[in-house]
Structure formats: structure tokens, C-alpha cells
Length: 233
Image (cartoon, one colour):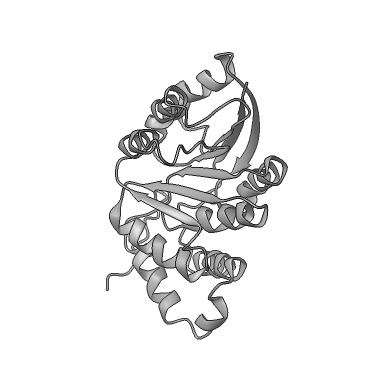
């Protein structure tokens, strides 16, 4: 199995073999039985492995997630959606919080089938396989399909956006136009300082449909970023 390759000039966040290396580490973990059905221990193990090996992961992490967790505890959503599953870190962290708050479902969308497969394994290891629904494929198509399912009639009380910044706004508009969010729904966007998210930021801050709060944060590579928390009016 290939080993992650470090680039000293640019931060590499994913796709160089670190995801496979993480799974190998977890599969062969001496205390795997103790990790099973323990979301907190699994997340701690991922964080420690990434720090010890100097492999930044494309995850929300503990620091940036604090305000999101506070919002989940306050909103107590029945259904939470996530755009950008990656390895399942946030699905475990937030999904466990939603479940503990009495929620009914966490739905996460991931375009990369390899990441989705790894995430499914880790989510099941955490004991959340029956709570977290994983939708594999293009997020826009997945959202439209979900919106067209008249039997389930899913509405996101809480939506976490953390995939490609260039489609933050278009995916949010799908949710708005097709009733996947409603008055009072909380929408949180990670990496909102990225230039690709500029149109999204303008929409939720200046469009008159949301109240929004910027939460400054620092990425693992030292760059400043923003978590943008919005509520649909």
C-alpha cells in the first residue's frame, strides 16, 4: 500500500494515500475492540494519528467544530444534512450529537466513492451506521433526488456545508427552492474564507434571507479561515 507523500511547499489535505494509511492503522489498532461503538475514542484516535504523522486531514477538527456543536445543542435538529462526508469525521462528531439530542437522522453526501466507502466503515465502527445515511455521488443530483422523494419528505433542520466551495451557493439554492430547508433552519459553512465561497457568503450575509455570524478560526496549516453560521428567516 502506498504511503502518504508530504509536500514541503504546499499543504496537502487529501488524496495522497493518507486515507488508506489511516484505515490500515485503524484496522490493525491494538485496541480496536475498545474503539468500536465509541465515537469519541475514534475521533481522538484519528486526531492523534494525524498529528503524530503530520498529516493534515480534510476534517472539521475539534477547534472549528466547537461552535457547530453548540449550535446543534441549541437547535436540537431532528434531521441534519451534510455536504462533504470525506472520511466520516464530522458525520461521527455531529451525528452522535444529533442522536444524543433526540434527532432521527443524519444524511451526508459524498462525491468520491472511495472516501464514502472508507467513511461508511469508520461510521459503522463508531456505532452510527444505523443513524448516518450516506449518499454517494454528485451533491446537486443527490439533493434533487432527495427532494423528489415524496414519501420521506426530508427537511434539514440543520445543514453543514463542507465540500467544494464553488458549489456552496448552488447547492444551498437547491435546498431553498425544493423545500429541503425552511424557516429556522441553521446552515453552517466551513472554509467560508475561501474565495470560491464568496458568492455564497454574499447570499447569506446580504441577501436578506438569513441572519449570519462569522466565527474566525485557524486551519491546521496556520491559515486563517471562517466558519459561517446562518439561520433562515
